Picture 1 (cartoon, rainbow, N blue to C red):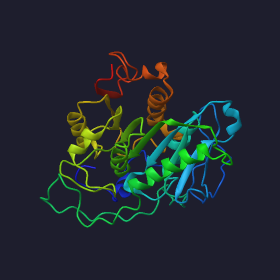
Picture 2: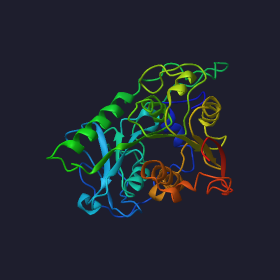
Picture 3: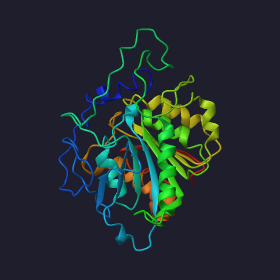
Picture 4: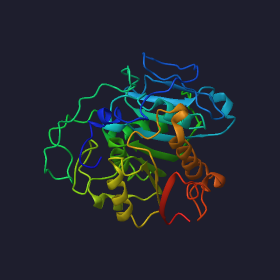
Length: 327
């Protein structure tokens, strides 16, 4: 995110060694599934499906296939904003399917779209940054974002209403008191804006962070470091190492946040592309599931990945950890 991108994210990701979509497992996915959609079902206890719902146009839903198998277990809700603020709900399909397979209703911005041969939606690249331009500002002349934080709020409102609607497949199957908002890169800025909503329980910001100077990169309001003071829930910032163009902004956000529990981790040897397109979302999805299980399901064993001096990521040589008010 730092100085080179936003809608250029997709083009930058294609330069990374981790951005090739792996062949997935066979899946039974409902809804429209154009060519280029990775077939995955997740490794969790529930086979997950990806679909669109006519009641929520322009969004993609990931959920356990057999809702009757929940046996009284309510699904927490996870809202997702895409990298590049892309209008493509299957852009992060392996990662989001994996999360859903552990018992979550995940709603991603954008419909199910056709992806190119590299597994990315077609998005216009940003123009090159002029030499000597201010690194604290995003590139000029970017195309407008294709998605907006308000769409995440709309998705949350829809899910909460469906949980109360007797004719809905989700009737009394969702946990409206446990809602996470997450996003990658540009979508991470969207997540930061939505995280101020009092109904949000936790936020995870992936390969992202705010610019030093105020911007409206997420397609919503102008966001500045002062907006970090509006966060009221535990937050995790997860990224690649210094090769990740969002690294500096994530580190700076961590320094600014002092009043809430915050966990900061980056994986060595990983860039801005993360591990989202590795089978079942790679190592990033394991971190996501553990954080969500801890924060939304009160799974204290999952919390051991983050809590204490010998936390799971603390002792993993691939990861570098910082935290405040977590232990």
